[in-house]
Length: 312
Image 1 (tube, rainbow, N blue to C red):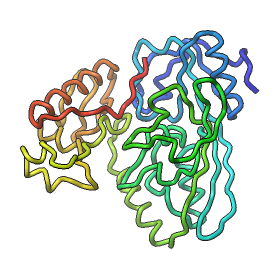
Image 2: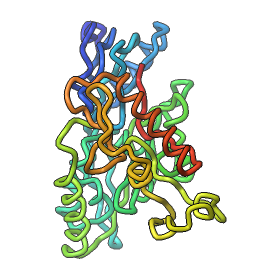
Image 3: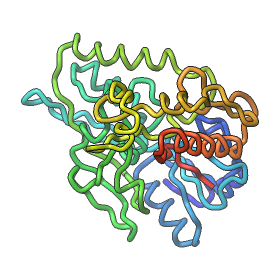
Image 4: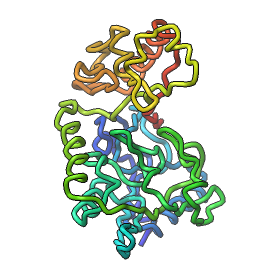
């Protein structure tokens, strides 16, 4: 169980982030259960400390200045495979369960819904918070309900309809509410159907950047009705997929593929990835983010929105 004696001080965070960038946490605690996570948050609040719940370490950029409060490394790993009926499978899990584990446990039973998450180095809590997705699929499609810790420190279960899911976002990304766990639902599919999506996801992983990265730097551009972007650049109509345009293409067309600042570089293989090519600092990454936003706005007249969350 959680004890104040378990709290470490001045722990370097770079090894906990997929970017391999970041200073030290003033206070650091690993929690193994949902109950420990709740107690850790309460301890931080009682001691007037800022806090941050760290999952798999993807989609974040940690400042070299570190974090002056409590970083809670969430390793709560409760996972319960429910009854299989009417071609559906219910799974209850803690927020610290790795998405990859859910992919493995459900697909081996012949159930579909999480295949796209193969190889993603994050937790299901982080996936719910950011409504992570790939291959035209997203986390919200498998969520039935979420158990959360509210801003008033009360534990509450809410339905999917109350989660405020949007493209790469949810209510949990916008406030102090913390995902404690979830009930997920999967549907029975043939082995061939499941392997088809799994193989697509595996190919994306195989072609991934050979350098540390946080994943996509920006959200893909969501096309609106009578969008000025398409009116001014009609050639982009052929780039629309699922109502979105890949931002990597827009950054590439803005002449930034391969651009380097310090140890950070816009990856040549996919321009929506900023990589740590060696010794990168958070400031290097932020400068590249700023440059990409400026150049894309200059060429296409649109504002890019970051997918990476900055921790400082």
